Length: 250
Image 1 (tube, rainbow, N blue to C red):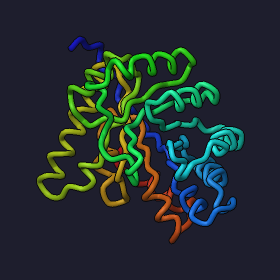
Image 2 (cartoon, helix red, strand yellow):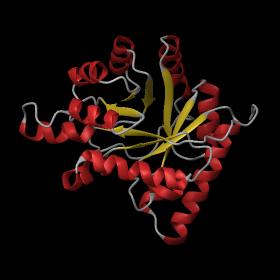
Image 3 (cartoon, rainbow, N blue to C red):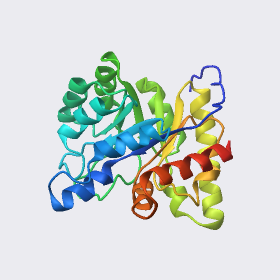
Image 4 (tube, rainbow, N blue to C red):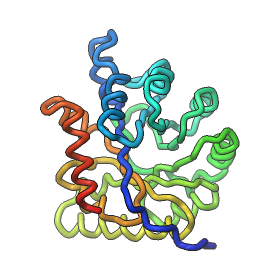
């Protein structure tokens, strides 16, 4: 694998908040409440660094019009999670989000489980990455913390990866320690290859600190847990507590 000079360590870890499940609650009853746009505005008001939204094929939570409304309502960068389909590429090219994170998507999934097989889908992904990049959209790949996937991201020319932290979040004891070591190693490898590493999936107040301490990580994207906590404490308090834990880890 050809590498570039190591990336400078990240002094501040950004927090991107995924607001999909505000829309999930709205869609359970129909209508317009609760509004994910209001959630985006709260995140911006309390110092969040970005908004993440996943427009799924079946529109189970975020809707097409939500994306336009979010972009109009806040100046925070929008991280648009999308499947590698022509429909989603066309949508991204129309709306020009700050970033597009390509994720695996299967209709039967409740949420995105596992990382994108960038290594096995190079020929399919290459033109998508190129089209998004040519439009000025920062491309990210949501991948498992594996060397072959990072090498594939480098070959595809993706400037960002998001390491899937689900295995770490679900493991216990020695297994969790092993998963944490993998995240450390793969974040360092990505940075050494000139790729900016992010991480997300399954992160909570209880398990985020160890991940946030990984020095090369530039951003964590957290959604479901924060929206769940917001039911009990409010979204502002939930985001502020996560921000405090992340800052303490650094």
